[in-house]
Length: 300
Ligand SMILES: NC(=O)c1ccc[n+]([C@@H]2O[C@H](COP(=O)([O-])OP(=O)(O)OC[C@H]3O[C@@H](n4cnc5c(N)ncnc54)[C@H](OP(=O)(O)O)[C@@H]3O)[C@@H](O)[C@H]2O)c1
Image (cartoon, rainbow, N blue to C red; front, side, top):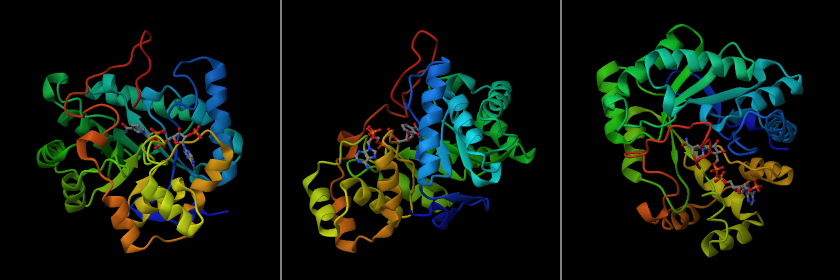
């Protein structure tokens, strides 16, 4: 079994993060029924058994309770895990940052969170003020409740603005990256600031797995297409958080560290980029969805 603890990235604030984590989005329906929490807990337990120690959840996934249950049932010490959650789009006001963060800690059953991300900039809401939201998140770090603060779905101007106005650089930008979608200009901006790139939907929600180029490379290495795609990410230095509800795939995805792609193979996968045509999910410049009981689900 691959030991993910040996593949560690040190963030710009000194916090160490396992490069491959487990995405927990939609392991269960997004509601507060005990059976939904149980389904999430069972998925997390299976991932822990496969060797995962880094878990990605979010307030808007409505599954933090289930993730916390799975972690608690493992019997492993808190320090064994790296836990990420994300601020919901409806919680951007500074008071709500604090209140909802405390709810996140309680739901996960922990006293300190490893990484908290602003899930979306939602620049068309809150009078365009995501800066005071960011400042409130960095205060959680200053108070020791949070180890590392980052963002998600931030574009170059969003990054520049929070950094210029607060002097605080996010540790991570969690963005959509897969072989059909990756923005070099955004990668370069993140790298310039020393911000680690974490790829969400790293497998393009499985859409890239039938690609003939990826299939050819997989065959050459006697690996699966998913392993090839994850190795393409990790060899290029990105953190990845693939989601799977299937235990054999959990093991397979961790095993992606066991081989290396050639430079030509990396370039061939880079060349599959379709630009904006490859984007799945909302546009960060316009996305303004806030979950409600009546419409608890959107694919992000
Ligand atoms: N920050 C954001 O805005 C944002 C947005 C979206 C997602 N995320 C995070 O990113 C995580 C991953 O993204 P995602 O769930 O959208 O997509 P993904 O990880 O790219 O793909 C998940 C899909 O791939 C399949 N799969 C996984 N491993 C496989 C394998 N080895 N072989 C074949 N199929 C495989 C899964 O199927 P089965 O489950 O049926 O096995 C599932 O259908 C989420 O869980 C969430 O934590 C963040």
